[in-house]
Structure formats: C-alpha cells, structure tokens
Image (cartoon, rainbow, N blue to C red; front, top):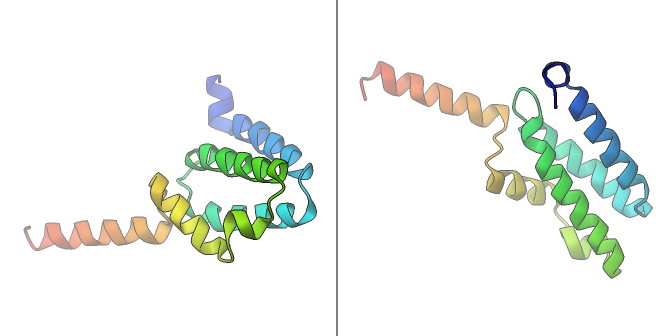
Length: 115
C-alpha cells in the first residue's frame, strides 16, 4: 500500500468492495445478517476504520464457511447479532466512541485528583 492510498482510504474502499462482492454471493438471510453486523461494528471503529477490516474479513469468512456447511444464520450467530458484534469487537479490543470518551474522562478526573 502506498502513502497516497493510505491517506485517501483507497485501500479500504477496494477492500470493502471485495467484501461486498463476497457478501453478494451469500444467500439472502446471510446478506441481511452481514448488513446488521456491519451496522453494529462500524460504531466501534477508530478514526480511519482500519481496525475493523480484519474483523469484517473473519466474520465474512465465517459466514461463507457456514453456507458451505449448510448451517443457518441462527446456528452460526445466534439470535442476538448485537451481542455477537459486541463480544467480537470486545475480544479484538475495538472500542466505541463512548468507551474512548469514558476512558479519557476517567483519566482526566484521576489526573485532576492527583492519582
């Protein structure tokens, strides 16, 4: 990846297009789950969104394997997609803006109190 691609985000655009092309090959219920997963993971991104690319790649790979094995979406993800995404992002250390702001506030208060 060259400097210009990193600055403009062209590399991520190409990667997202690849993800979307892979997702279009999935059955409709898996595509709907993929959309929900994206909607629930994007709030946990850093400024650039690069921290989510490996997570999204692995989730899409999981969905592709599940289709190949003949499993349903519920068997793979369960009934709580939001919980699945929270657990997944938490394991990877992806924090939401609320988590980052809470940490920043706690650090500021601790510094002001002299701890």
